[in-house]
Length: 193
Image (cartoon, rainbow, N blue to C red; front, side, top):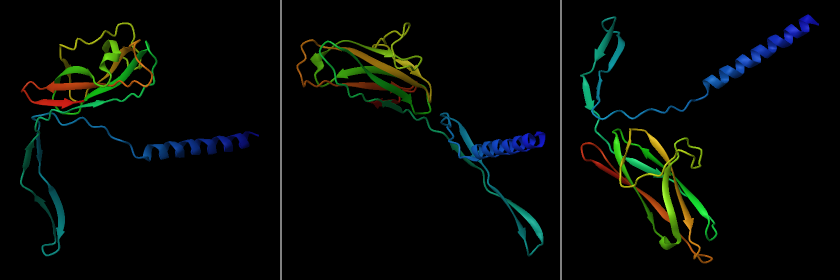
């Protein structure tokens, strides 16, 4: 009985190791931060080869090449909600703002109620600090007159909460757009909606 259990245990161990090795060898997606603005990238290429005429290994170096990373101000807004609502209902649109550039940005937010603007009331834009998709205690509405800072690669999740007017008629359509204007310390701008 003991040798049977040892054989089963050994085979199980080999199977687990093989599975772990297969998982380790799967391609991994790499997420890299963008190169910071102003960074200097310097490279010298080197190659070695066997020179059959001289019978020696020779090494050749290229000239040094340098590149300075340019400042790129870029911001992206992600979000779309298609809701079916009743009169007087509280509703929420969900947005995400991402600094896809390589410099810190000061982002100013504005929500434009486009279609059916008169059907929206009690509106507020709230940062979803813990990313759970709900407005929690301690998550206060943004002061839309004050920009906020976003570091390169940083993202913020937002919830636009509003009440549908009691005067809305069946079939009425409403729509809202989050518009973001971001500036760098040097005055470069990026816009998204």
